[in-house]
Amino acid sequence: MWVEANRDAIEVVKPLEDALRDGEDLIQGMGAGSLSQMNLAEEALKASPWSGSCECVRTVYPGRDMSILDLLPKGVSKGRALERLAARLGVDREETMAIGDNWNDVGMLEWAGQGVLMGNAAAELHAMAEERGWQQTLPNDQDGVAVVLEDAIAKRAADRI
Image (tube, rainbow, N blue to C red; front, top):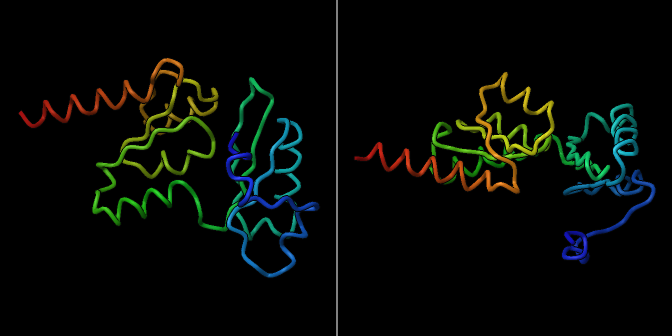
């Protein structure tokens, strides 16, 4: 659905290396396929001469045997975007909450003063949440975001009384 909604802004380039030859900076590259295909693609990128020129961030859906690799300019991440937005809005890091459920959310969860991992995230991410002190909530299909936000709003209201 996302691809169809954004079809006018998407250019398909095969082989991927051809997109890098014109000297123009890419905004984003994306590869999608099965878990094994995208694991091989990620390994190939890490072994390529371009590995130092871009970030490779993965999103994994094991139940669907689907993975997405986002190829972004160095330094571009959800964490960096959240940091810049908070600065622009004058919001302190400790007052910032990030909620995520996949590998591409790790930078954002690490930067935020309050990182929240969704219940439907991979087991490895839950272990990371335990290590890093991120809150964990219910899965998407059990309204985990709403539960966390309602709790945060109630605590904030109670603090003001």
